[in-house]
View 1 (cartoon, protein in one colour):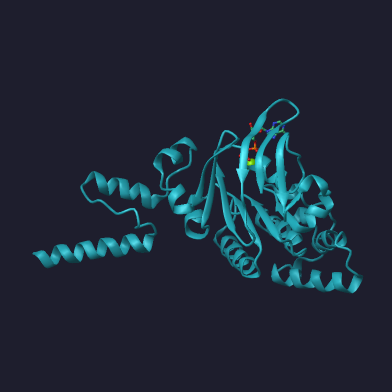
View 2 (cartoon, rainbow, N blue to C red):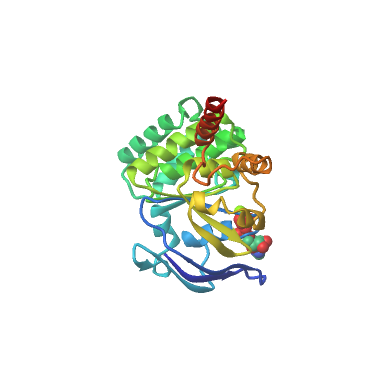
Length: 276
Ligand SMILES: Nc1ncnc2c1ncn2[C@@H]1O[C@H](COP(=O)(O)OP(=O)(O)O)[C@@H](O)[C@H]1O
Ligand SMILES: [Mg+2]
């Protein structure tokens, strides 16, 4: 929970203003907004990498000021936008083992967890490869694997679908479903509005360091004024609805997904041809 949080960088940039936010266990949330809105700053505060200039942050009813970054990072994992910043071991396997080290497991437990994640992420044939010799998508996958292997309670992704091909996105969707089944809280910073609409039930929209909307995704992302203010590109389906309206076909607000639009339009066509 965040209570009236401000964050100001040492150079004087006010990156967050008056942020209040409640996040429940097991929720799946998108954080959206234009570049510089404060999304990355917000997630850095959530796992204690930055301390609020004003206000308080609570995790499981305790002020996170009372916890070290090491303790918090066992429970809250962040996968940053640029994965190469996060990878520094000599091999894929070492990267995972290094990440597991701080959990205080014994050697055999560590080995079991590492094997599990190496299999899950298809790194069996890559285990001795240097992370520097992975493709962008693979490096991102390794960064995710090195966080997931620690079984965090909250996972925060910064732009996970950026630069991923279709297969990478499928893998990611599968992964988030597994984590949601486990009851993990997932927070995704993304510009991918179609992904958010299809998969993420709650959206927080940020403009210039402030939260301008927070609620069910379809309520937040249907608001043309807000979308405009945050320089997001309206989903194709909504652009299409606007065009249809211009030629006199009004699509109701509750027609939100592609399948619903197809159903609505085919009913409309059916009715019209019945009338003839
Ligand atoms: N290390 C930093 N020092 C000073 N200002 C920063 C730093 N990181 C980000 N900022 C500024 O803080 C604001 C929010 O940035 P950021 O949280 O990265 O936004 P977003 O992730 O939404 O693009 C921007 O004005 C950015 O220029
Ligand atoms: Mg960012």
